[in-house]
Each structure stands twice: as C-alpha cells, then as structure tokens.
Length: 441
Image (cartoon, rainbow, N blue to C red; front, side, top):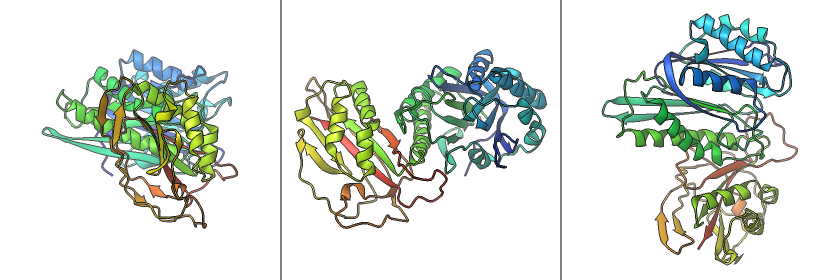
C-alpha cells in the first residue's frame, strides 16, 4: 500500500470502549492541508460536527489534525460541545497547532456523556506513537459495528510527478446519507485550491456515498473530509483537474461499496441501475425508492426474483413514466419486458465473473441518447460459494467480490438487513451480490 506523503497516523486505547481495543485515532498532516468537507443534514447534529464546521470556517479550510474517537458519539449530551472543544484544544497545544486547525470526529452510542479526561490523558501516548505506517491501524480503531476495516488507495501519474490518495471509512448501520457519509477521511498529497477541492468533493460524494442506502437512516455524526497537503509538489491545474476528480470519485465509490457490503446483518449487495428516465433526477428518485423498499429487500433476501416489487417501488417514487415501456433485468436476465412478465428459467447455473452494462437512454422527448457507463466489476468468484439447493433461482445465487467499482451514471448500492444474524463476524461465505436494471424505452 503506497500512501500519500506528509501524513502521520496513530491509535491508542483511551478507555472509551468497554473492551480494551484502540478507540482513539489521530491523523496529522505535517503541513496544514487544504481541506473540504460535507456533513450530515440530520437536524440532530453531534458536537464534533458543529465544531468541525466552525473550525473549517475559521481556518479558511486549513486542517492540521483530525482527532477521532470510537465508542461514544458525543451527541445529545449536556457537555458535548465542551468535550469537543477541550479535547481539540488539548491536542493543538500538545502538537503546537492552531486550535481551529484541529477537527474532532466521534462515532458510537448517542446520549452518553463522554469524559474528556479519557481523551486528554491519552494524548501524550497517542502523539508519541505518530508514524507514517499506522494508516491501517486507524481503519481498525474507528470501527464500531463494522466487521472489517475499510480502506482504499489510488495513484495519479502526471508529467510533473505522482499524486497519491488514501481513504479510510467506517459505517455499517444508520446509513442513508444525503450530502454526507459516515466517518470518512481521504488524504492526498496533491496541491489544490480549496474552492476546486470542495467542488470535486461534492461531485464525488453525489456519485458515491449519496447513492448508498442500508437502513434508511441518516446518522447524527456523518462526516466526510478530504485533505490535500501539497507534499507531492504536483499542482492540480486545469489539465489535471478532470483526472484528479475521476480518481477521487472512484476511490470514494470503492469506500462506499465497502460500507454497503458490510451493512449490519447484510447478506447481499445490490446495485440498481436505472436508465431511460426523462431526467437524471427522475432516475435517481426511482433508484432510491427501489433501494429503500422493504418489499424489494425481503424478496431479494429470500432469493425470490420478484420483479413486480421492483416495478411497484418504481411506481411509488412519484415520477411520471409509462409502465408499458418499463423493462426489468436482474443479474443480466430479463424478468420483465414492457411492464409484463418475461420468460426466464429459475435454475442453478454459474455466472460469469465479469459483468459490463451498456446503457441506452430514450428520454421523454423521444430523442435518443447513448451513454456507455460500464460497471467494470472485474469480479472474482467468491472463494466460498453457498451450498446450492435444487430449484433455487439462478438470478439470486451468484456470489462475486468486487475488486473495484467504476463510475456508474446511476448507482445505488445498498446492503440488506438479514434478521437473526450475529453482528460480529469475519468471513461471510454466504454473501452474495445482485445486479438489477430498470429501463424505460
């Protein structure tokens, strides 16, 4: 794993968790980093979110350190604001940073008072352990109900040098972001202006975390931060900007997919692709309605290719379309054509490990638009396939593991809730992936 230059990482156990597992993390940029962020739109916002917003405004987007605690959300408490302020100021004093260049982030239980002394007493040990190769330890220390750490890295080659990116995220429950994510931090050594970085972050977020849903809830602590410290010496100019934006988007899509895959109790990852709608927003609205439909979730959870529930959810989205022109495809197999049942066999058969989709759009005005946005799954067959029973639907018996996820024009990935599944698990041999496509002709 090649990490961006100019960053240090550290973790320690501060006693916030009930179990002796690292619960305090630190990300430090050796030079103040130009930063951009988006936060939860939940009206109930945790103290760290409020202080991070204030500090970013006061520092004009410069960030030197991020202090993250797990095990307590520091939300809906009497002392939340005082705790966030006291701990960030203590860290700033320890490292010699400006207080407004230190951002707090918290994840865990809501409504429980957080003792700031647990954090301030741990700061000396935490700061002394800062090093370049502790990135993966941060990904583990910020986990709560997550079963696996979630990281992604990328490199961008230019004539002036190499730009590197590294992202770390956590999240498994209370996930249906809107202009926000769970806790996610992306570091890059690129040199980029704040307005351009904020614009790129918004675009990348809309194409990744904002198209993900697990349980339909938005957290009080959602934070997505991108830091660019310029340590590579490579400026993101007008020529390099599109490539940088694309790399950032793909990295964030990778992280978002990992969250969806690891949803609390998840057994399946579903990617919904809507094409042919009159507008981009219409397609987005329909896809989200399908993703959040309990009936669609239960059908797929039960390995039932019940396309009627998909079409019904689309019809309840509040978007005008002609059902007689709607097609539904699952796992590449047409199950509904022109709003009517299509013939398909529900038999067990292996599926190809690679899936590419080409999308043909027919807009409401009759003009034909062609857009090819391939889902370059580059999937490899799951190592442990679920034991197949005779007569089980082939459509929902496919097990793949994404190695990377390319940009989709309309992407909504969400993980299903599966009752009676232990939340603490490492290997999930029964995990499957399902692809559904809804097309309007």
